[in-house]
Amino acid sequence: MRVTMSDVARAAQVNKATVSRVLRGDARISPATVEKVWAAIKELGYRPDAIARGLSSSRSDTVGVFLEDISLPWAAEYLAGLERVLSRHGVDIIPRATGGDPQQRYNALSGLLSRRVGGFVLFDNGPAPEADIPSVIVGPKREGGHTVSVDLGSAASQLARLADGRAVELHQGENPFFPGIGALLPDDAPKKKGTVRLFDGLLPQEEGTSPDDTVVISATRRCPAVPPGAWKLYWPAFELGTLSARLLLNIIQGKGVRPQVVSVLPALTGPL
Image 1 (tube, one colour):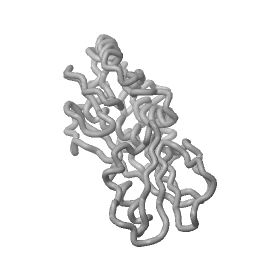
Image 2 (tube, one colour):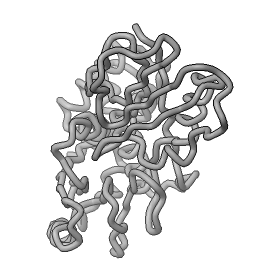
Image 3 (cartoon, helix red, strand yellow):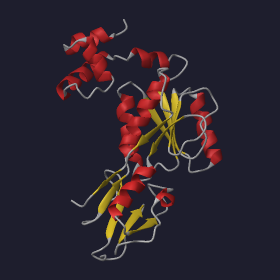
Image 4 (cartoon, rainbow, N blue to C red):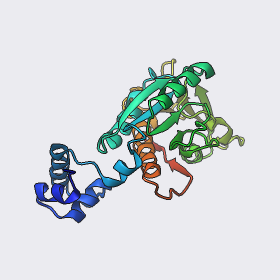
């Protein structure tokens, strides 16, 4: 017999509306109630109807995830955010590293399509699949899918406010968190002494700075460790994962997804 939302509500000793709100991630529900409802869902093996319909027998309850390099330090945080949302709906992820190689990407795409995955999350530079399958693109908008991206304009504006008339100097490594931000940073002649120096994808090598200088390190929750006295420009790896998962689930459920592009705001925080 198929498990229903009423069964979950009865097992968790709440009403159906509360179960529905928990499934939608409503922040107004207490943590204790959320835990109780999810325990009942897990025990009974309940799958929300909309997800079950979207991932019908013609598609598996798996999602393909493409990254250029799965060994990058932030990849684990991103995948953790993605999996936190999808696992609650009984959806597993299959990560694939494309290495920036079109042939490798094509082979991975073909293999996952043959396994009839329920959708794709594309965190690389390749195009969305031509097949009629739900897809979410993470990064700059490309043709063929809904997009989740970091708001570079917001990051640049926060740095400009921090500079407050000082020069802004950008140092980027091989794998920066904020590619393209250089074009958005202020290039006016400085009005004050000192420099705001952003180190994106690398750490400063020299010892010490002028008292008029401010060092900013781009980082996720866990990497890299920001040195004492430095500011942190937070790159939201985990949040990108949770948002791209929710967006993909909405597409699978057949909901009208608007807007086409969802932006995640980075945060600039001062030294602890």
